[in-house]
Amino acid sequence: MSIKINCLNPIAACGLDMLDDKYELTENVSEAEAILVRSAVMHEMDLPDTLLAVARAGAGVNNIPLDKCADEGIVVFNTPGANANGVKELVIACMLLAARDITGGIQWCKENKENADIAKAAEKAKKAFAGTEIKGKKLGIIGLGAIGVQVANAANRLGMDVYGCDPYLSVEHALNMSRDVTMVKSNDELFELCDYLTVHVPLLDSTKGMFNKEAFDKMKDGVVLLNFSRDTLVKEEDLKEALESGKVGKYVVDFPNSNTVNFPNTIVTPHLGASTQESEDNCAKMAVHQVRDFIENGNIKNSVNYPNCDAGVCTTQGRITVAHKNIPNVLSQLTALFSKDGVNIENLVNKSRGNYAYTIFDICSDSSEAVAKELAAVEGVIRVRIIK
Image (cartoon, rainbow, N blue to C red):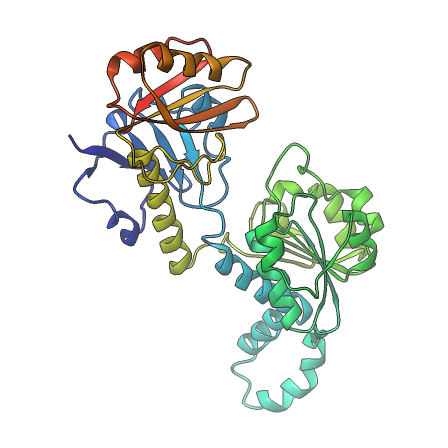
């Protein structure tokens, strides 16, 4: 039987083309074994018992009930880095728009298009839109993930003095970052140093409203703040006051709402960051690849509610995966059951993340439903799958 995939949003064809004849697209979500989603909100959905995986073609997953999925053994994936270049390019473009009033100059030309002597008038008017150059200015980057690192490298090449802060900087991203980027230990150091600040962190309880009056007071006068992460990282009543006083010279945000579109000295774009065709294609291909690897091999990569766990392609007779609670004695009970049934475990990969864990067992015999049922009966086990 084919594996049924439901798309809650349109997914780029180049991604869906990666599904071979083992897969079938279905419009009936109640029979889906995997869901591909972009922005559709899933919090009120009834998740079918058949559902094994949800793949978000993008980075943010606030539209998906992560804990509910984890409790039901549904692995949720996202596609970090697939849209990073698209966002990076928009950040750089908007930094230039904030430095020089290009949009104001364009608007002036439109308003004066009937003036036969517009060239002469422009020479007098242009000083109002002149602005400054970004070369030699200090840029602070909060969050050096896939996007933040690309912004850092691009800004460095443009001649900016780049500073970064990320207590969770990965080895991979550190290796990809220019050696000219100066790391600091706290956001406060960036606030005091930098002419431009750009933020690339997820929306969490710890980051919500992180840009507030206390933070603005620590910043340089006239600072330019760029927000391509989430609008709720900023406490908007405090931002309005900072903009009106000139403490914040410009605010650039990619999330329009009824407040920010009316704030002074604000550049608002309609959530364009990852809206390039290339980004959508990359996200679709990455999401489908991760779903296929999970369905076919039981491997988890780029999950947001379960640990990454990769045993490669199975070369033994059988493979069984177990999603379970991260509590004592579960793993020992699982291995004891294999031993009791005379099944030899050739390879075992076990990883945990918060309250949840995941184990891949490669065994030297065919996987049986009888063994799977015994494993599923262990307290703390959420879901057992026979892969091979």
